[in-house]
Image 1 (tube, rainbow, N blue to C red):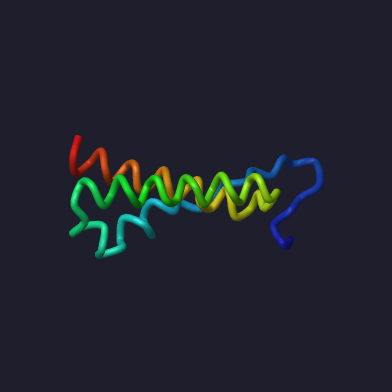
Image 2 (image 1 turned 135 degrees about the vertical axis):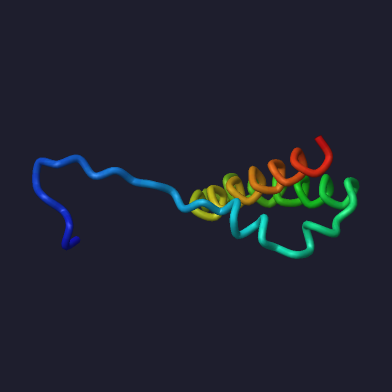
Length: 77
């Protein structure tokens, strides 16, 4: 890393996936039922990835699920 200086703590910042999921044009047209179904599908995929010890994939799916839930709350309260 070019910007690393010994003795200085380095902060890890996770990428903001909400912008990527929120920008998906399909979400805008999903019904409440379809959006709930998508959230549940992603949750199941996340749990399977964690069970299979694929923690990076599980973390990506967790972030996607949170973004879908935020979109759900924004649209349907």
